[in-house]
Length: 137
Image 1: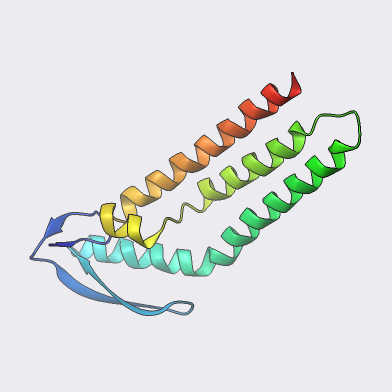
Image 2: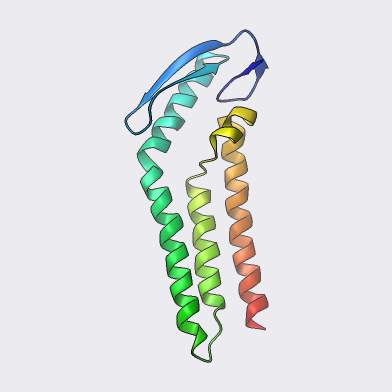
């Protein structure tokens, strides 16, 4: 049984759509309505344009956090600021750009995958704040 790429609705009566992106080439998906097709195309175009910022945010904040923790290791200051920058920054990046895996998108649809991505980002931010305080003690 096929599923709508945007809302995740399962049905055999779905329209086949082809989405062409500059970065990923051409892919075939299924949509249950014209609105779902339009939303999916907009989201995939947005993802294709912003994937470089997503990756830059992930690796940039990870690298910055590791550098701050390493710099704090030799001093008498807590490395918790590095943990906060790393987890908080990664969480912020995932919240702003909630791109999920193709497997998640196929299972639940882009709409719910976006929500799952944002929740994961907010969880990462909260974890960074909590670990910052726990490591400071």
